[in-house]
Image 1 (spheres, rainbow over the protein chains, first blue to last red):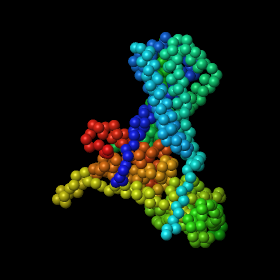
Image 2: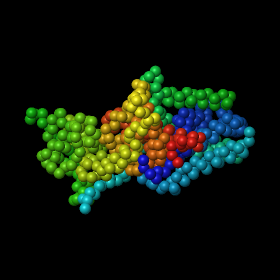
Image 3: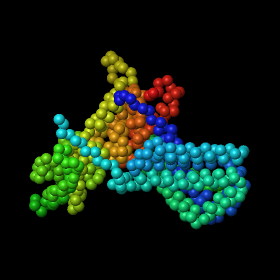
Image 4: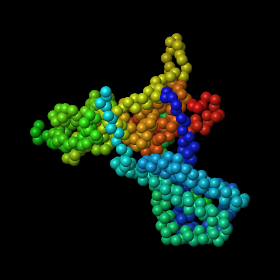
Length: 122
Length: 132
Length: 251
């Protein structure tokens, strides 16, 4: 066995990547369709689907909070991991800088989402 | 003295050299669209926290042609992410043995895509019910 | 005979460490018959045009794993790839990608050999048994758990197919991890925890980004990508659960 091996901390990021990849694969397309296409164009869904009252009610519900946080945070952790790897793959080995940019953005977005969701009350 | 002088080739542009790698880079790059969409939702959440006027402003912004075009692009990109995510799944998971035989890759990919379809319809149904 | 004899252009990436600064392409016009492999094309060049052309080969029947090369950019065993499938187009042969070129089509495999050694590629018995206790028994199911991963012939086509190995030569890589998995999956072996130190290390499985091309080019259907990715799950379990179990794989 080789000596001086250093344990990789990748499982944390890889775990978030896997969860986000699966979550976005399952729900991503339909979410984009609902929030970005159907509701703005008034297709299929009732006109008040994303009204202020409805969205507040959703964001004040504990399950709603969990879903919103999962979507924003996991999508970003998934993307951060892939983009970080892609940068390495196209020859940008920025190391710590690229790591901070990718995972840092996901981390800050997670914190902002959590703070807003908590501030909206229950 | 050794006459050895092993030559190390450059990796520059490796992903352009093989159609398989080009497809890999395309499906990896869907992450950019997932990130962009998540950032739009993050902005929406922040606007929701700022009150009704801010939220309405965000909803109106979603109606702009630019936003609609972007979301159509996101939809295509994320659909491709869904397809490739389940296409890779057979190599990323441990073998599943049913009745003494290993479940084939097409069954795993098919089940994943079916799960995505069901998840999408359930999501649409729930949103519909909450909206009524 | 003569009406069967066609000519194919073979472009070869040549490199002589004593006289060349860098590799360059040379084209040879090779007469061939339908039963001739790319390896035989290279042998024809060596015998008739340039005796200094250097390449590895042995068995000519896809079992020794020596004759791998890039054929039109794809890692293949040259003995089971036929010139007729490329004619009338030109064919380009190069040393296996991602390895340092020693001379012409011969690459430096010493890094790979070290990796093979590092995974402890032998059974480390779970429980020592004396002769009186008899042989280790294994059920057909237990045999099936690892047999696929024993088929590797160390041809290293998977390394030439793996961009992550190209980008980070320290990555243990597909074939060595597939072989590691073969021993971990063997019911007689008890060293999976020992090998975990390597699997979970910075040289280990997390270098893989599931490109999957290694399994596509494998001539023996070993599916090294699957072995690597199963071990990501194992390493992640070990990472998060090591505090619960006093026998965690590595420090």
